[in-house]
Image (cartoon, rainbow, N blue to C red):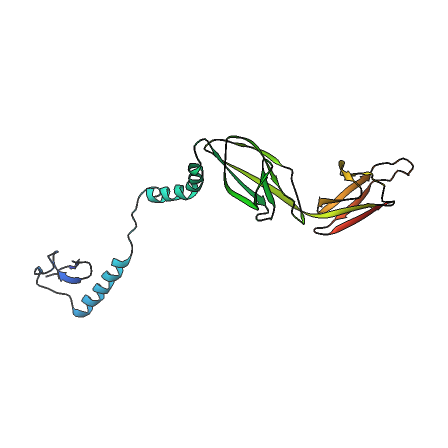
Length: 231
C-alpha cells in the first residue's frame, strides 16, 4: 500500500508537527497509521519555519491603493499644509535663490524680510515686488513682480550668475562720462559695475574738448576686478 502523504500543520504559529494522512487537529491521531522518519520530520519542520518567515505579497492588478495614497500624500501634502495654514483671506509667498543658499537680502514691497530664502510669508492678495539684494561674486536680476492669490502658494526664484567687477576711473578726476555696457547705459565714471563673468563691450560718452574714445571689449573674471582708465 502507498504511504500516506505528509501534511504540515501549525497551531499555534510557533509550533509545528508533521503527521501522515489527512489533516487532523494538533492532538488528533493520524490516519494511515504511518509517520515520517525523524530526519525527514526535522528537515520538513525547518523548511516550514523558513517559509513562515517570508512576508506574503498579495497578487493583483495595478499598485496597491495604500502605496498610491502614500505617494500622493508625500507629493501633495507639503503644499496643502502651507496653503491651509494661511489665515483666511491670505496667500503664501515662498522665495529662494538660484544657486540655492546665496546670502541675498530678500525684500517684499520694499521691506526686508529674510536672507537667502523665505519659506512661508502670509500676504494679502495683490501684487508685490520681490527684490534680491546684491551678493559679492554674483550678479542678479532686477526685482520681480508677483501676484499673491488667496489660498494659494506663489513661488519666486532670484537667479544669480557668477560675476566680477568692472572698475572705471578717469583722468582728471572731474571727468564723468556715461558708461555704456553692451549697449545699456550703466553709470557715470568713476564707478564700479558688477558684470556677469565673460566678455563685455564698454563704451564711453563723448565729452566736449576731448577726443572721442572708441568702444573696447573687456573680459571680466569671477570675483576679480577689471580696471579701466579713461584719460
